[in-house]
Image (cartoon, rainbow, N blue to C red; front, side):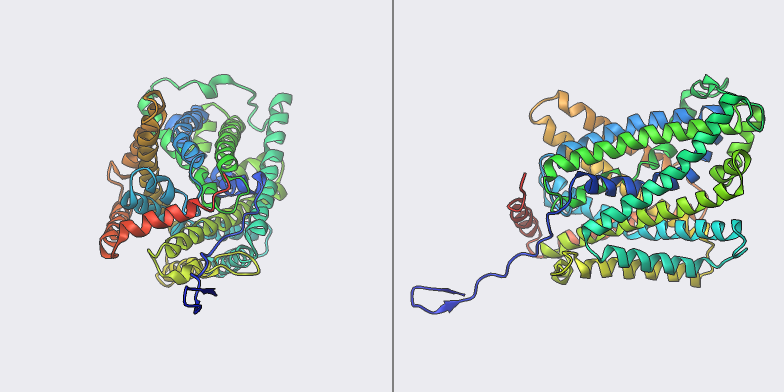
Length: 483
């Protein structure tokens, strides 16, 4: 209590809810790498590239890495100047204004409301595969497995941001190491000339086959691009990293570079493992579980089962990172009065925005339960939600790079070039995810994303003094920045 001139006690303004600044570089970077879920990505995305490019599937990921690098440039530069729990909400809000900033944050929130359930479905899918491969259960129901993953994610996320990031890192290290074991075994047998199909090393994986043009390469690169989704996640730790303006840009760069090297190397070894001939290419493009199939061919069933377990851990880490991002975005909106202020509550013991985390987890549970009641298969749930989240994420990528282009272009036209290219690349990937019009029900999913974005625009009109709330909130948050 303070006293006024009459000597009467006056109440002090309530202190702003604050997250704990405790994360070092490795812990910060683990969220971006974990949400990318490289092991899970390599378990499902290589087939699409092989279907388009045949033996040259690695080129799709090499080109995608270049494109992602240009998109990430804008995030890196903005994260070096603004640090905020709402990440793109602040990046865009401080450069384009309150309404575009909120819309970017709203689009990111839309992604991370559905990405954790996507990851949970990844746990269920690979959990079923593991149970089947080990003979423990031949046709397990996906819903109990999903519920178990949901509970584990909530438990780990509620312990605090440091235990959360360390869990994400541990899951991904284990799963990546399992893939490296398989890659090493394949490379050894290729070099020794004992590969199952008699194939060996070949540079043809980096040469487009006859009749395959640049348009096919570009289309294949869009699927490779999506394997990097989540590289920006470290931006949500702007109020929990010790030196966010240094650590977060480095974390984003590290995630993209790691993904580029790991993805290209892994898809190259997968392609060579199947073989660069017609039979090998056909086997790769029609494989439903390429890593598991290669493990059985080159090592044996036990490694295939362990790779299913590795993909499960990777998905668990991605889900854990995803709920961390969503909870921070809800926390930021609640703190600025753009959502219920109850969402800005921070647990005194753990420093976790527990109400925001609870809201995120309950939304995920509703989605999973609704699909189970509808009788939707695990794979369909995975791809439906992944498509919705990806479309919303691409909208956010476009907005953030527009903001970066405007911000950087003020000082130099040369600096305008990378984010402008990022806008074009993200826009191109977005376009190719909606055109040609996909078959039902996927053709209807873009309309769900559009409805979500329009709802966000409606919020900016409905809240009294919206712009002042955002400006005031961003200004106060800047005072928390240790630079």
